[in-house]
Image (cartoon, rainbow, N blue to C red):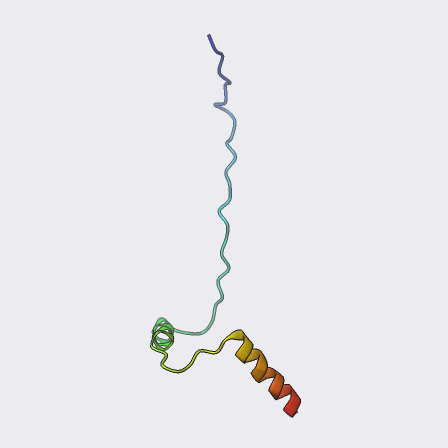
Length: 63
């Protein structure tokens, strides 16, 4: 016959769930919804990272 360990008094190890940091700002839920809608229906061109870096480099040269 196999003997089982008596673990009735031992506490099991609980793994902690990873926490997510939340950025708090002063926007209301209506403002956030409007902002999200503007991003979803954006009709203009989207800039790539290369475009943004080129714009910033030209700003630095003009100063």
